[in-house]
Length: 398
Ligand code: FEO
Image (cartoon, rainbow, N blue to C red; front, side, top):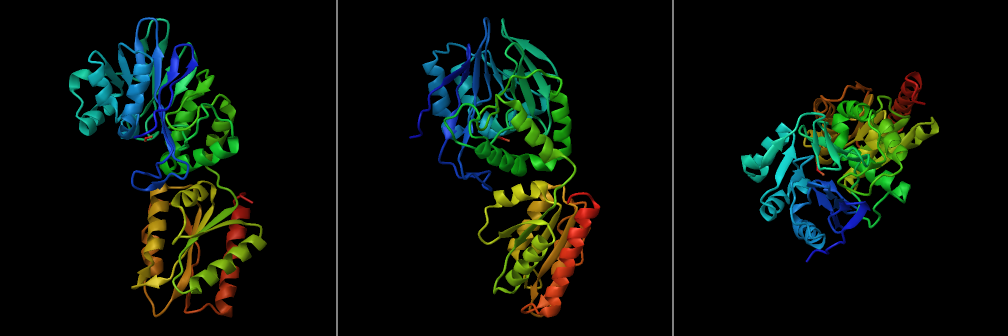
């Protein structure tokens, strides 16, 4: 039995009615959640109408229904679906069943998705245009279309009179906490950056436009649908501005895997050589690393050097996975190289280079060695470190 968290009033007649998932450790069967997560749902009781903003993951539907019972909610007029992904939409069917008069309010694209994903009846929807409003009597909801935070159908909801922005995934963090508001900025920065890296980074340029779009709104509180709310806006907006900026930092990331230690020797040498030249390095052993940490490192990095042995004439599957991930997440990298050891030959460099077509990068001369690295191989690694440090300086990252 899941814990039934308590609902909480955040403004007069505006309630947090979400669920805290302390124990979830994986999202989308892919993304590690070391700190759990929350599915924040919000209830607004206007003088005439009541609206529910987003619901909760289907595994926690009892928590949301319990909150609504606790608040003695007799009717819900609007269920605002900012986003169709099931961690927010998964309890819409139960809410619609409990409140037969309720309509789902969403973008036209979101309507199609909710019909596909949840088989919600067509007549239960009201679709809204960008900047359209709905009155709850003494309160007004404005809907701001904001595609790709996180899917193409996403929108944000702005409660005008209270100046609260409900952006769903945008500005969210996978963090289970009893804090309604951000109290530990260090902890939330880490969780929000992880969230950005894994969920938002592929849509970086669109997010720049969405940030621009909300700049025209007076906002006193950002109430996302994951993690704590932001009552000090500057903290999260400044972080996002930095993450979505076009300019990377003087950082090299070295994801690697090593079967018998030769590639590892090369990685360790290169890490030392880069550090000596003033380049900050983050090294990840792909056999054990948390891929969320690797994704976070990619947010700011200017260079990635993949370390891999040659296995069956190509890169080790761990290295192929890292290349696939980097290609999919589309970080603002500028340079890529490959280092590693082989036994008798293969096409490791060609195969890895072909796996990153989305990255607009310059490929720096790889360093491959046969068996254990020797003096000449270490010299080649020093030369690679020189090149990386020089390129970072030339581009103004260092
Ligand atoms: Fe939290 Fe994209 O769902």
